[in-house]
Image (tube, protein in one colour):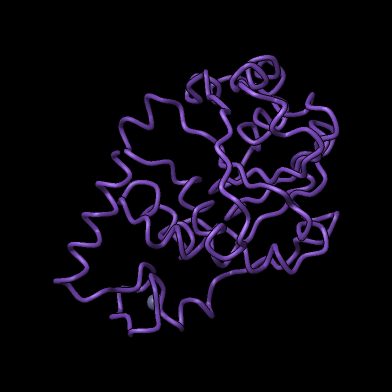
Length: 232
Ligand SMILES: [Zn+2]
C-alpha cells in the first residue's frame, strides 16, 4: 500500500513541477526519465558483468557459491552514484530506481553470464524497516529491471528475520551463523532448478547478499547470481 502511495504522490507532483535530473538537478526533456542524457553518459559503469575476476566476485569468493556476481556502477563517496542511490533509498525517488533498474537489465540481458536468468529476487527489507520507508529500494530496482527484461514477476517469500544493524557491529566470523539465519525461504519448490538473480542497491561487505544466497543454496538444482546497482 505504502509503495503505491509514494509513487502516486510523485506522479501527482510531477504533473505540476518540472522534472529534474536526479543527479545534476537540470531540467529533464520529454524523452529523458529521472536522469539527463549527460548524466546517463557520465554514469561510472563498471562494464565487467562477464569478468569472473571482477571485484564483486572477490567479495564472495570462499563464502558462498554463486554462478555470477557483479555490480553495475562504481560507488564513490560524495559521487553521483551515492547521490542517486541516496535519493532512491531515503528520498522516496522511486523514479530514479526504476531507471537504474532498466539500465541494469539492459546490461545483464546482453551479458553471457546473466542472459539465462529465470527470475529476479530483491534482497528483502526487514518488516520494521519496510514500515519506516514504505518501499524496498531493491524491489524498485527489480521492478525497473522487469520492465526491460520481460521476465515474469514472481512472488517469492524470502523473509528477512533479523534486523541488519545488529549484525554490522559484529566481526565476519561471529556473524557467519547470524547471516545465514537472517533470511528464511518459505517455499523452496518455486525455485527448484532455476537461475535466480539476487538484486540489491549497494554491495559493500556482501553480508546481506551472502545471507540471502545461503538461504537459497539448499534448493535442488538452483543457480544463484548477484547483481548490485553499485559496488563501494
Ligand atoms: Zn543530469
